[in-house]
Amino acid sequence: MSFEIMNVFSSLIQKQAVDEIVKCNDFTFRFGLTLSRQDAIELVETRTFSLKSNGRIEFGGGVIEKIIKEFCDSPYVSMHNYVETLHELIEIFYFYKNETLDLISDDELIKFMKNSFDGKCQGSLALLSGRELEKMARNVRYGYAPDYSEDNEYDEEDEDGEY
Amino acid sequence: MANIEKQHIINSHNLSGEFYFNSILQEAYICGLLNESDLENIQLQCISLLAYKSERYNMGESSSIRVETAESIMKSNLYSIGVYLKSIPDPDYAAFELKTVKISELYERGRKLVNTRFQTAKRIYNMVQKNKLDTLNHSYNSTLSENGIGIFFKSYNLEYEAHDSPASIDYQLCNPVNDLAGIEFIQKYLENLYLENEFCKKFATENIHHLLYGYDKSYPELLINIFEQILTTALGCSLANRNIVELNITGEDIQYLYKKLRKYDHHTLMLTINYATNHIYEELNLTNPLLQEYIERSLPKIVTNIEIALKLNTLSKVFITPKNPDLEPKIHFESSVKMDDEEYRGLIEELLRCRYSSDKLELIKDKVKSFDDLEDILLDAQLEEEDFILLFNTLGDVEIAAMIKRHPFESDIQAVDLSEEEQVVRLYLENYMKQLPPNRQEEILQIAKHLVWD
Image 1 (cartoon, rainbow over the protein chains, first blue to last red):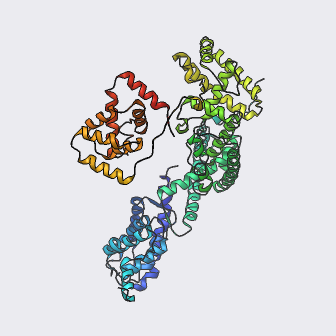
Image 2: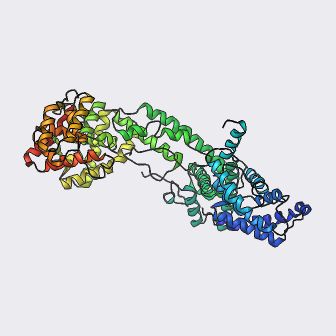
Image 3: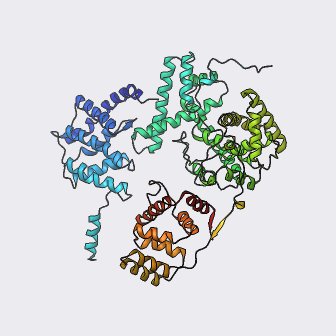
């Protein structure tokens, strides 16, 4: 059976997803962040596009909502870059779902993205996707903990005064 | 009286064994048992089932899934439903079930059936292990080992990859299993193999070994079907009035068969073969109807082989004359003890320093007393082709034959993983052989054929 039928099926899901994204405004309002219905439609389109370009399909929704709720309290997100940041985050998210070989869950990945974005990357999406997530994906693929770093090990050893 | 069969709207011959679900859907739609809205409803249900299974696959931790994984899960779901629908003898009723019963319910029934089949296949696998033949054929042994079909019982995933059969199966059956997948394929393969074994077990291991050795010396490495060879020879024995159990046909028998069978047309040949088959049943006391049915299914293939061989006068390639490898003439070759390592190193150094071929030859003649040392020197001393020719001229036929046996001429592609020195030795040896008179070449090759190392 072909997956083209998904398109008919997903139009229903898409409408539902837009409603859910708009509903997030109630939560993000206190951080001074809101999305219009048009923004929400575009975000859903980005999701559909990212899924397709990364060779994935999604049955339920919810990832955009999770990203919004996780990132809305970031000091590096404000109303003027909110929508763009969300678009990029969605694309990065699906790309790294593949890169991590589905070994880490949605929630873990989003949490890692948020911590790195606020921490080491200081709000830079380029650093987030090009450095932190790249490193994390490599660690996961080789069976290390996501935040494993060879530099850390040397640092620790330094502190122990072994060198 | 002919069998009375119930008339069905769906023609079961149009249904695919491997993709049963898709084909029954298609046929039911063509026959008008399902309409478009039914199809749409079934498709939507299939997708809901896929969504449910994907979520379980991800254990609720991920909302998206790779397209390939989703496709595989979908195939697995449809396969399981297909297994259930296939178990309903009336395809019209199966179409009715598709229309009236929920897809998820059909899937559950299919899954249970797949599980039962899995257990059955496991039992048959154990039975096959018990009636396994004692043979040198590698593909047979490896297919029946833990790393062959054995893998299947460890890694079959009936939840998400029920349509797949993860096993390493190289051994070819006489009646190959087509148009089945997953557990159904494995079960059918094992059933057929069990029947083949049951037949072959009627013959002594030694006789089978001699027969296959007569077919080809290197039968342990070949991808052949043992059952087919035995059945063909048994038929030949029966036709030539020989003892079937001994599987022994001689050249004269084959000549006799050629004269006898050449006159027959297809129909008469088929009748004769059928008669011979019944004779085999009696002689070997074969009463298992399943085995008889299996043998009869193999006959058309064998008859075709015989017909072709009769046309080309190559009957001796179909009816094989057994050969006992122990009775073949052998030349035993023994190399004396190698020289001491220290001494050998000294000799090589000296040889490398030598300028003239005659000096090298003298040195070798003087110091080398063992064939193994000579072989090492050919590889290590960086001799020129001229030195080689001079050296080989001093050797007898047996030594050259032994050298050929150790370094056989192979095509470039077979020799690709040999060291450079070894390739050089082979090349020089081949060139040397080519310039010998043809009758001496023949003699040397004959010796090489019968040479055995002690």
